[in-house]
Length: 293
Image (cartoon, rainbow, N blue to C red; front, side):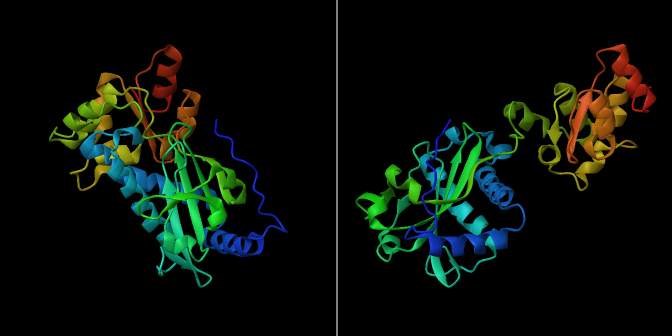
C-alpha cells in the first residue's frame, strides 16, 4: 500500500497562504463531493483511451507509453471542464493565476514539470492514478526548483519524492468505483455484439453471465446499435421474455433492488443481474415477485 507523507503545507509554510486560496477555489468549483468529482473525470479519461468496446483492453498495463501520455491530455481537458475554468497560458486559470495540470499513471509518480512552469514558480495540480490499488490522488504544489530533480533533455524536471510533503493534498487515496469491465471476456463480448436481434443479444449475454452484476454502460455498449437499448432489457419485447421461459429472471436496480437484496445482490440504480434460482427459496422469492412462472 502506498504511503504518502503528511503534508507540511500548514500555516507557516511558505506556500500555505497561496495554495490554501487555490484549494478553496477548487473545492468551491467541484461542489460538495470534490473527491468523487475528480475521480470520475480520471476514470472517464482512462476508459476513453482504453476503449474496451473496440479494443478489448480493460487495464492500463495494456496501453503503450504514447497512449498513457494521451490519458494525461484527456484528463487535462476533463478537469478543466469539471472546474469550469478557462484555458490560459498554461492548462487553466484560477484566481488569475496560470495553473498546469500534471498526471501520472506510473507507480513511481513521475510528474514532469516544464521549464516555463518552474521558471516562475507557478502552481501545479498534481494527479496520480494507481490501477493496482484502484485509488487516485489530487494535490497542489508550487513548482519551486528546490522541489524538483535534474532537468532532462527537454528541460523538464521531475518532482522529487523528498518534496511530496510540500504538496497540499485535496484528495488522498480516493477509491475508484468497481471496474465495470473486470472479468468480462472481451473477445466474446464483441462476438455477442454481432447478434442482430437486440433482445436475443442481451439474453445471450445474461445467460453466459448468470449472477454477474452488470452496469448499464456495459449493456449500452453491448446494444450499441439499438435506438432504445434499455427497452431491450425490459419485459414486453425485451430480454426478460427470452429468459423467463428458460427459468432465468432479469432484475433491475431501479425496480428490483429490495428483491435483489433478499437474493444476496446489492444493485445500484443502473445495475442489472440475471438470476437462475439455485434453491427452492430463491425460486419462491422470484415467483412471488412475479419474475418467474
